[in-house]
Length: 100
Image 1 (spheres, one colour):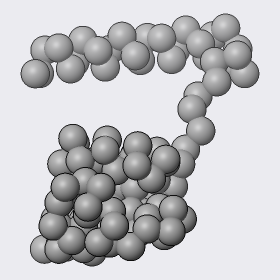
Image 2 (tube, helix red, strand yellow):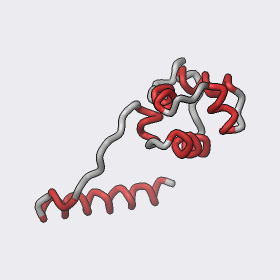
Image 3 (cartoon, one colour):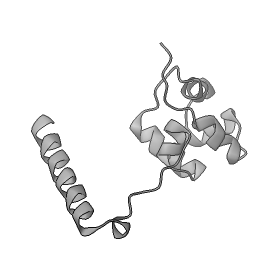
């Protein structure tokens, strides 16, 4: 089954004017691995994702999803909205700690 991630990898690589072979050399990987990542037939591992992100000078979101999202700016929120974001963050932290 085809993996839906890694759709931005090829575009990010092309933006840096690198071939599949050149990126493979920089990552110490086989070019076929890069091709499999780009086609979505293999999932890129977290360690390689960070390496690729650094080499291509782009976000991991760009590599995985083909887009870069802007972060939430708390300064633009009301005090009530800021409290809700904080409460949500604390809930998610607790949930993560209990389930991992």
